[in-house]
Length: 364
Image (cartoon, one colour):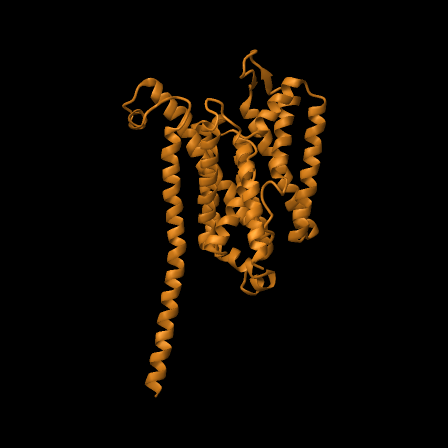
């Protein structure tokens, strides 16, 4: 009788272990599928564009056997743009994932916390007050940003200033996660008001340059910016993955996390700082790109669940895929006219988020 009871217990244990392996295998399969979709989207993107290059010419240019024109189009225009979309999309999405966990708010993202508006204020300050925007000719491309590194630096510094204010308030005044979100909303309104005041006293060309920057454009980055973003976001991903168990504990509540030995305040502030850092870098290089940090993690949370061992890499890959597809559409929908990728992500991201929100609410 005792032997039979032991066999039943062992069978239940094997069944639970097998079920767990199937459960995790499905999540790993989703991540592998995202890798495959990104590869397919990249191959399509490198072949898409106003320059009429066939597949053979693209392959020859990638391998270094193409003509000078095809090599210039592929290596200096399309590939930096594609890699920047993959890297920036991953950074924005994983930043949103960590912010939503740390603040225990599904609506937390770089946009809702005012980081993007702070970067826009810095860019407007550089373009209008310090003269980084000018007019080149009377053609269609008349408005240019003649000091892009100044604009990038100002956008990055002010984005970090905005987040530093929230983190300092949280540290010194003991802000709760809900108060941090409200502080972000208040700072977002403050920086938006500052941007409007600067533009009110600006000339028309300066306003045009400032608006052009806020559209979001992956074509403005070179390989140097791509390398900087790649290094920064790769290190940040490593940091987030090392903290994955702490984030899982935070999902169970602060008291539970503290009972498990997690220093909640340090984990939260550290995660918010790193997420803000990569967001500031991405926004300062490519402009404001909305909804990637909000929609990407929400989609993946519904597919792979809340386990951050899988949610963090899946969110990064989903962000890469969303931004890469959006940028390809921006380049091809009205070619040779290139639409602002920020408008494309918002146009498709808002209905998608409303759908996810309605679907999640209906299940409750």
